Length: 127
Image 1 (spheres, helix red, strand yellow):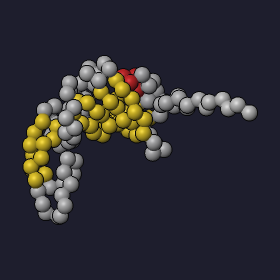
Image 2 (tube, helix red, strand yellow):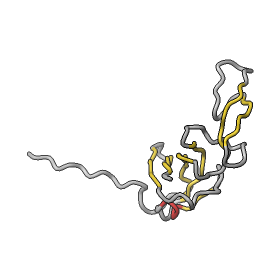
Image 3 (cartoon, helix red, strand yellow):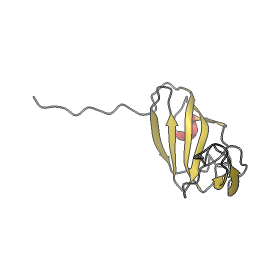
C-alpha cells in the first residue's frame, strides 16, 4: 500500500513524497526518529509527528497500537470542542504505523547535504 509522507522543513515549507514500499516504516511510533535512507534522502533525519489511516481517522500519540478506538476526548488531536468543558467520544488511530496507515507527517531534525526536492527548472523564454 502506498503511504503519502508530508515533511515539514525548517523554512516552513512542506515537501510531499509518496512511498510504495512502506514495510520499513511498520512498527514505528509517533515521536520516533527515522533515518533518511528509508525515504531515499541520505543524510537527513526525520521525526514522526502524526498521520492518518485510509479513512482519514487521525493518529493520536497517547493511544497505543495500530487499530482504531473510540475514546472520550476534551480536545487535542481528533476533536476541537466548540466550548470549554465539552467532551465527546471520537474515533482515533493508535500511535503505531501499520498497513492501514495512508499518510504520515514528519519534520526534519537533521538536514542532509542535498535539498529534499530539486529546484524546478525554469522554462526557456523566447525573445
